[in-house]
Image (cartoon, rainbow, N blue to C red; front, side, top):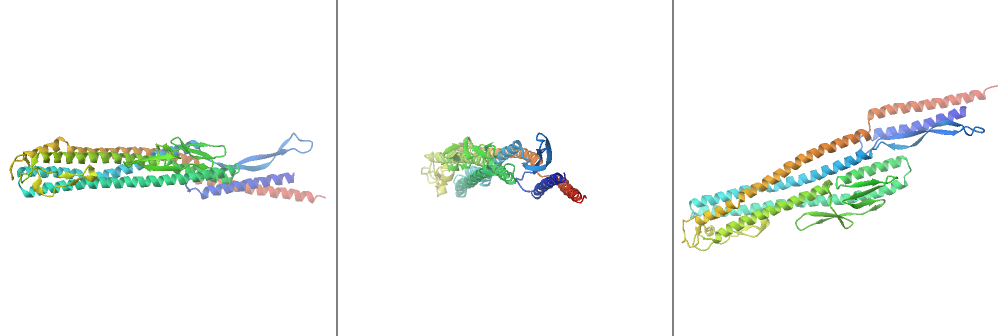
Length: 442
């Protein structure tokens, strides 16, 4: 009996010590990102009753059957999904804010208004050289503002493409690491501490990857994960297929996995792609606006004569917001008078036609509408981002409450397992005392 009591107590001490180790590990990693609370899973050890009593079962102590991770696959998947949506909104909002800054800070709208104001002032005295110079200077400023706006847009697009390229490289690094974790999981013992650590690494890698692109996951019995995005497989077992990025002529980007085109719907890559589409759209509207101004002004120039009575020549040259420039060098060439008018004519009817062409073309209104549309997009996306942030935070809190470490609970467990260890030690001492007493009988 003493021997049985000794072995039972020893098994209890070993189980309590293992539970203490797990509790200490929980406390040490309470603030570690991606750490999931562990608990030692205990089970009773049973043995046959002995010779002549084979059918009898007697309890022979306890043992640690494995290390259990307090993980919830549904909550983890929800964190990945909401985090992916938030990352997409963050990336798109950042790009839209840069677009807004590029258009607003260029001063394009103000330069259009100032150019029209200079034309209006010239109408009061068409032969005044100072007023003519002011119109030419206003045209040059307007062309420069278009150039500045498109250059700033280009810089915003370049930043988005750089970030997308860096994120693609990071996704490839994470995918390679996930493949290695899959291989190690296939060799890890069931319920071992090493396996729990590998599962933590797997979940952390998946969460980071979901911030880059939306992913779908499926898990094997050994914990290995298969990862797909856009219908293409990134990781399967120990195999990894890299993701690539390509830039189109208009600056937009596209992605492929193993040569198969994919279109992320979440993560930073999706946000960058959407923002670059907005950059291309705004660039197109700037080009249309620049070409419209140049066409209206040059057409009016062709219908009139300059101060010296010669046919009017184009003020603007080039195409698009990036190419527009002032070609005229002498303000006397501004065709304020109609065709056939003599030199130094005060007839400003052709100038009136030019102003009417700009007004009917809605040049200032188009520039204002562009600014309004960009600002509205930024405001709307900011509201969406804030809502997604609240949803993602709620999912994160729910996961941490379920899988995180509660120091109060761990402190109670620490005391409970210490007492269990001490009780097992006391039982071993009692068993030893009984055995010694038996040996001393006469």
